[in-house]
Length: 416
Image (cartoon, rainbow, N blue to C red):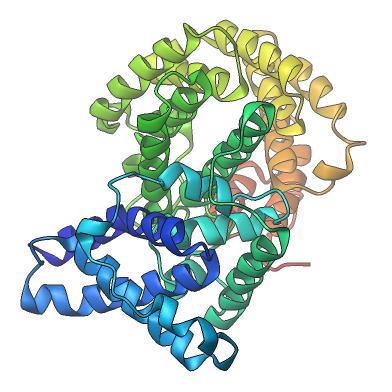
């Protein structure tokens, strides 16, 4: 088995092994550390020695031994040592897949969104602390502290290893989906750094969404979220040039979009919209499917996009939804209509100085012929983003609309 195949296998097995160990031992923090050590040992040994006949059993046995060693080294637990000293064999472990239970645990409401994401990627995604730290551009020590505190908060909350019931389960599922959505968004458009996207994070979010979909096949919002991810990820190969520069949606070579992902995402979208209720992920997937259905940017069904955003704005009001509706409104009515809608966001503190608001306003001003206004807003947007790829794109747009009376944008990319 190749190294990438082993890596994929380990990520698939991590939540299953952790779930089995937590269900038996009842302590998430110690079990999670033990499973991570077992996964690291496998990553070193399996490429050289071969994958064992029962990889799940191997991981479980090694993790159990690590847990025993931890208990032996902890003087406060010496009295319980004899009760935990027996090795757990693969045959003793039920074959239940506890991935969904783990996701609910990692997305505990007492945790911040950043902690939920980090813990999900480590415990369910099987990423190491170093990999997660690199993905979010923070020191490994910082990420280690974040993960450790998250586990301690879950322990302090006294959470049981079981799925919530009734209304609480529905609320917690929405948190799980939101965390997966945030992971995908960070992978699709990185919030900072030199690269526009981090495909590994986007792929991991899709993998986890598939796992949730497999366990909750009747949930329309789960299907909608997976569809949205697939339809969006289908564009990944043409979102940047060979030099790493951003290519906007309207200028992408649609023939190079991944038709397999588009077809799968479109079918999932249709299935999700046939459900009894309508949620934000289903609507976003329908918008993405509308864009994917257009052979060229000019053929986009903007009235349909505008109508879908109107519904989305009503059921899940959000300034970013309004911003995107302004783009559709500019296409269906006029750039001035889009600018008028954008003006309603100026008093929203969440959007103050946001590079997306500045860049969309610049784009619409350019369409009205206001080159001076567009130039100023492109410059401000470039300064406001921490993404170097977006920064370069916005700088190029500013240069394109610059009039002879305006100075060159020296130091445009510097942060104020």
